[in-house]
Image (tube, rainbow, N blue to C red; front, side, top):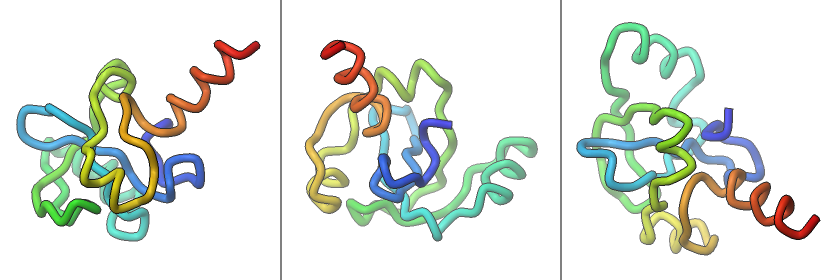
Length: 100
């Protein structure tokens, strides 16, 4: 999945809260894949703190939301990555496709 805490995503989950206005970076160790899977199955939110210090209940957005939502600018600044749209791994793969 493109929102998992892989190196290309700065080791963070990219999740949404509330009205899904933006994707926020949640530290990889803060949420296990099992916790997220259980929360999705039970329709619950997973509580955690984002890199921007926002503490909320988080949920995994769908594929098109991960591609089209803006990343939280304060989260990006905290991680030292450029602000943009979609998860960082998706943005990198789009740039590679355009260069080819």
